[in-house]
Length: 311
Ligand code: PEP
Ligand code: MG
Image (cartoon, rainbow, N blue to C red; front, top):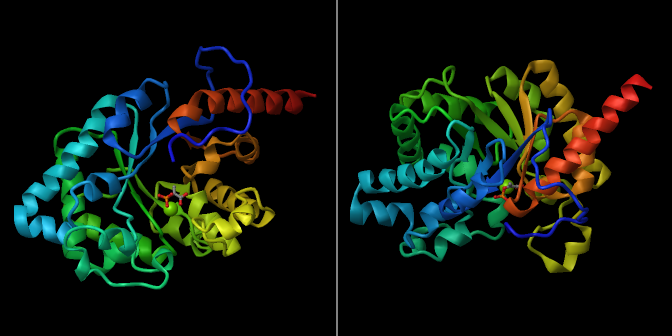
């Protein structure tokens, strides 16, 4: 996933260009942190926590049963911390656990997981977290400990949010875990059409940022399974319907003072970069191997916008 090639490669200077739009990097495994930081990215736009958990080869419930809650929390703290250290003081946006049940089912203890016909439409992301607050509390405790250690560059991002109600419930659990939502930067992924159409309410609920998960937003908007090769040619992140949702969210967020970003694969593609910078997105998070190309593409678009504005 980290190595998907960009569409075009143009000759470019090895020097990092200065841009108004921030260019960040996606990190899926803590071991990639050093390489990610060396790109000169302005931060981590998406740190996935799934690998930290799935690599334990046991479901969280099984792992906790055998090793205790504290060991589970420590796994998360250590994984996140290694990335937060590498980037400090650049911000690191950490996404809470977002594994579908079919992935949990492959782990030891997975037989207790629900068997679902449509895992991607099922019990995952914030839905699962809100349904099992006692398990989610361990993740939030990991964040609380990181803040206590001084990692004020850590931000919290909630996956598969649908509306303001999801945001408010997640915010309440943050508070219960001893995290002050007014003091920390936190936000929601925009990866369902419902979330894109509800972002005004989510802004009122207090999010600091909205981040486009275009892998899922495309899948759900077009009803095209992102993992189904039979319809792979229909998976188009630049489909006008997807772009319309994205453009509207950026505009609404601007009105509400909410920061916008993208952390889906499409952020590594030049055409999407051109669209997003034109729309005025705040930051773009790209795959490690695409960061430098994206930085230069952003620079070109920003220069063109500037020239157009004085012509
Ligand atoms: C996305 O949906 O675009 C995203 C970044 O999340 P994931 O690929 O992990 O579902
Ligand atoms: Mg997603």
